Image (cartoon, rainbow, N blue to C red; front, side, top):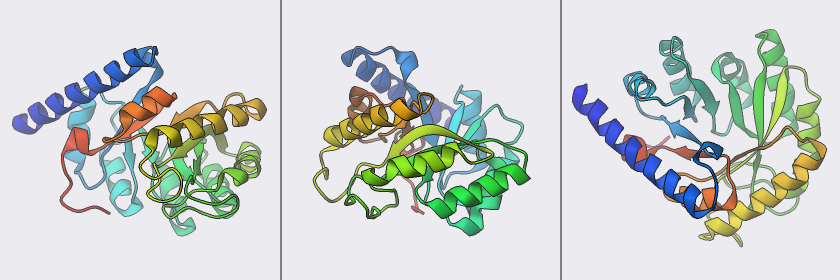
Length: 239
């Protein structure tokens, strides 16, 4: 376990250096960017080590893995983010442990999240997942609502009992005009965030960037970056 803690500490330090350097290059304060460590496929023991090392935000993308892990780590001072595509039949479980759902992309999901948040007497933060590989009214290959659908969905979240509209999230698209152009994709997300905040000033969270492109996300103005591989290592099996 000591070896694993040393490994994670070293990896975290390297990621911290990258974030700090990206913030400096962009003229931003380091405190403007929050690191979320994506712990999918890794055990609760790693989550516990990360907590000991000062990590306060972790993310999961599959409820069947996340639910038992969150329960095992319920004593830790962590904020849990759900970042995967979420089916409505998993909402009751996710609403029991997630503090923020970053993948809200359709009306039915908002309705289900609201119902279960109220039932659990919890408030769930919600990010609208934006698909930059979609047309104005289509859905993205990896989930998400097209830019043209943000306003309506955001209004729905903002008015739903038990939910709090926190902002926007995106995954750098693999196809379309922004493929392999992460900087442009994240700048587009920031433009959409500016528009959103005119109607919902408190929805100022912008989640973008992962291990390979966190610098581009920080340069664009992201408030949160989601880093997995650079901290935990290459995963044996991706879910």
